[in-house]
Structures are given as C-alpha cells and as structure tokens.
Image (cartoon, rainbow, N blue to C red; front, top):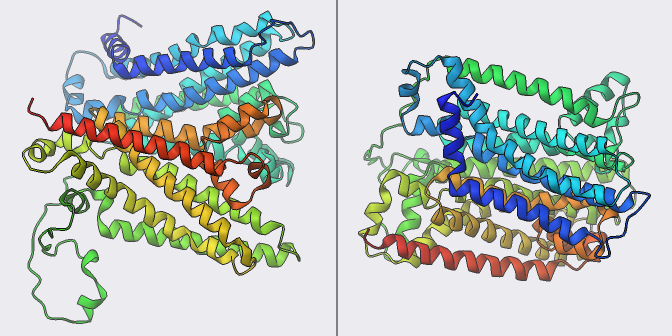
Length: 563
C-alpha cells in the first residue's frame, strides 16, 4: 500500500499540517483528561467492575464523538481540494491506473482518522488495571470506533467526489452525519417513548437496522447494554452486533461509489451567471410594487450611504448565501416550519390532554431546543467563510488598500453573519408566541429563551470569524467552526444518555457550556432549572464571544499590513 505514491503523498501531507497536529493533540488531551478526572486517586480495584465500566463508558463515548467530528475534516475535502487546485485532471493524466488513484485517495484520506482511533487504545486499555471488565468489551469498543472512522470517513469521501467546493462538501457531510448519528437513533431513545417497540415485527426490524447504523447507538449498546437508551426491537441482536456488518457493507458500497465517480471524467463546473447591470426605468406599476427591490437581483443598486458599513453592503451584494431572495426563501421555509409546528402543538393539546399546564413548558422546551439547534447547524455554514472567502478569491488584496479599519471590517462581516441567523430565529419565534395563548405567565420564559438564542447567534458568528481569521481556507475554517459549535450544542448532550454514571458536578460543568441545555433551563424544564445554567451560560458565552472578536480584530489588523 505504501508503494502507491498517492497514499504516501496524502498521508505525509495530512500528518505535516497544523490541523492534524492540533486534532491529534486535542484527541489525546481529551482522552488523558477524562482518564485523570475519573480515575480513583486511591487506585482501589472494584471486583464488580462498576468503576471500570463507568470509566470505559465515558472514554468510549468521548472518543466516538471526537472521531465523528474529526472524520469529515480530512475526508470531505480530499477530492474537492484537487478540483479547486485544478490538479485532478493532471492526476488522471499520469500513468497510474484510475483504480490506483482512487485507492490511494481512499487509503490516504482514512489513514489519519484510523490513527486517531489507534492512539486512543491505551486510554481504553487502562481500565484493565481496575479489573471487572472483560477484554471482549474493550475489543468491541475498538471495533466500533475503527468502523466508525472508516464508515463515516467514506461517507465524507463520497460527498467529496460529488461536490466541487470543499466547504460545501464539509457542510453536506456534517448534515448527513447528523441524520445518521442522531435522527436514526432517536426511535430507540426514551425521548420518542421507545417508538422502535411500536408496530409489527417488520417495522421494528427496519427501525432496529436504521438505529444500528448510528455509531452512538452501537456504542451505547456495548458500554451500557441495560440502559434505557439501548432498548431494541424484540428478537433482534444488540445494536453493535448489527452495526459491525452493516457499517462494513455501507463502507464497501460507498467505496464502490467513489471508485465509479473517480473513474468517470469530472464534469466542468457550471458557469456562474454573469453579473449584469440593467436599467429598470419602467414607471410605478403593480409589478414594481409587488416585486420589491430585494426580489430584483438585476436592478441597479443605490450607492452606499455614509452611515452604512461598506463591508456589510458588499457581503450582501456578492455572497450567494446572503442574497436577499435566498434569505427571503429561507425565512419563508422557516416560517412554514414554525406554522406546522404550531399546528402540531395545537392538535396535540386538543387530542391528547385536557389540562395543558404540564405540557406547555415541555413544548416550549422543545421549540427552544429546535431554535438553538437550527442556529448551531446552519450558522457555521454562513460564518465559516467570512474572511477566508475573500483571501481565496483575491478580494482581500483590494480591501487592504482601502481606509477601512480592522474593526469596521470585522463588524461588517459579523453583521453579515448575524442577520441571516436572526431572520431564521425570527421565523421560528411564532411557535413560542402561540404558547402564550395557553399559558399567559410564559412570557418571562420566552424572553429568557430569546436571550439564549441571541447569545448563541453571536457566539456562532464570532466563532466563524475567529477561525476564518486564523485559517487560510474556507473548508478548514468551516470544519473547525462546526467542530466547536456541534461539540458544545450536541456532543455535550451525550451526558443525558448516561446521566447515572456522571457526578452532578461533572454534569453541570458540561451542561453550562451547552446552549441547548441553557435554552431548556430558560424554557422551564425542571431537570435543567435545578442546575441553574441560564446566567452562568450567558456569562461564559459572552466572555468567549468577546475574546474571539478581539482576536479576530487583531488578526485582521495584522492581515491588513503590507506583506
């Protein structure tokens, strides 16, 4: 395998990057830190294996989350990077056969992800010192981690063969991984009232196989086989036993699909529509009133006013994701989703309960969590390329020649990230307002929810600005932004899956970083309110936001200097 020059080139290039060094250091520090925090300082052995199983569960779930977050960063940009640098056609013109090139790309992209799993094995094996854990359980954990790295890595590589831009491939890959890891597993969780047990044997079997495709569900069935989160269909094997062959089959299928895609000649990217300026001198009419200025992309724009931020105006006129007609479409889609959610809430109250007092805070908690998750999943796609896009396209060299200060540039970029996410949250807000019709005293909770959502918007925007100012490529900045935001908003919720094995102090320390948990506290969810997360989360997120903005301004000032 090492004789393949593509493998050597990909592996050496990946290991020599700062991104690989930082990811490896974070992975090892996280594993060592968990082991140090959970280890009994007296070194006592537990013959029943409770302490060893507790440590194994936490470390295994932590390593699984990090593997799932790091895999797209390397595989989703493997092929798109060649397309962006116009080197894919030159690579196909060499004497190497297409199969060797495809195999080299696949093996080279997965090598670093597999190395992460191998480097975490000593932390998993440390539980043998406490006793009570069988070696087959640790081997099952390693097998799930290894197949997760290959399985999710191949999905990212397949997306990379389809997309033409690295940052788009990373966004799509994270969206697919969210569906596989979270959505597929939800029918087996108490949140859905164990929906997997409802229906006939065929229906249960289908849901059981889909849930088994989730690495989180497979790992839970290994480390916590008796947990309420590991409940499966009747007469079906444990999730991890289904996950091993199913993930291997999916990896083989995605490998065949990647080989097929790489054997075919790459189609040329679609030409972008030319920017034309057309005069619209028609008189005031119904058409002009109906189609306002933000629906007419070809109309001549007015000059930038003295009180407007020129960077903000430039962003809204040039970036495709910030074009007004796309923003209006996203706003309409979110509004429709909010209306459907309101109907669902109303019909649930009318059909299921007579006294709505107990369920209204629960519904407010659900809506608040959905709003925060929407910002966390869509925000990095908007803010990840705030500065990197200009540096990649050469626009930054023009901005350096202007008199704009670093603060003006950062503020304009930040506002261009905040406004779309604010519109998204505004479109989902009617679902909260509807609840006031059922419970008048819910208004303070709604204010607290909107405060958490607003702070989350600022945090996600500043995180995108921070990584975009430090990274040189949009794909790298987007991957790091997704990694941090998803870790805080979703990965920390994994404590809920095994709350009985964590101490209250550790659980609160994790939850206080999570905007979803803070929104649940603001909505009145009793388990989170007992922890008192709202005020502490706002302080921590505010300090982190201010720090990232300060670093972004200093970095922009540094980039504005002459080379």
